[in-house]
Image 1 (cartoon, helix red, strand yellow):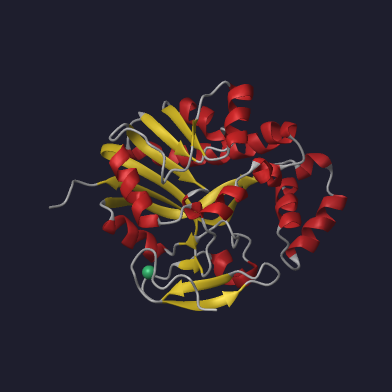
Image 2 (tube, rainbow, N blue to C red; image 1 turned 90 degrees about the vertical axis):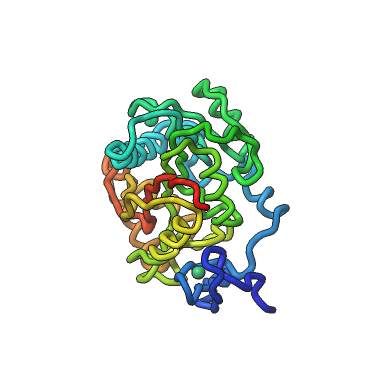
Length: 295
Ligand SMILES: [Zn+2]
């Protein structure tokens, strides 16, 4: 069957088959122009709606208590690292967190002086955040949600950009929602990362809900094309613990790594398996500033 994607989603170069993932059978294409990796057969609208149902955050832990306890603390440490990177580039203002999930970013944003607003596709997460944290989120898909133009000083998309169907229209929309000189802050699985190159078809980021995986070059092309000036590009550092990693590897096994994690899980004391440590996650952090309109 021919692949559904005939041209690169960013530079319109010609994609070629790179590999098919074992077990999950995902066809991964690579753009000959900018190096973007893409799913050869991306899910349609109906399948995408089913993906983000109530069970979606089940990969985060065994229970809601764990999500709002341990997982939340880890995610907040990761967001604090990101906000420290943003601080030199712009004083805090109004920020939209796209795909804010269970709201871990919102409190961190506030701690760093920002006035946060959250958008989340999963209605279950929206209800949980309202009930548990008292935050009222916008519910919907970034690509179709109606938000006011020029309302934000920054737009944050961590672990979400790769879920969108089309990167160029998404960045164009982000640009429209931003005030002049506003920032877009992206963290996205990166095809140029060491883990992508090392693990290839076993790279844990290769999932059906991730539609594309930019290289460093594709991100630069994307920003240039959509009127953003790149301020910072560097590997994303996340704070994880052994328990969280074991949970992810159970759900998406990688030969050898899953076995090591299972054995560690059996011998490590509880306090060690819950201890958070910084790790390069195979994603890339990009901070880019909305440039002036071009003629
Ligand atoms: Zn390309």
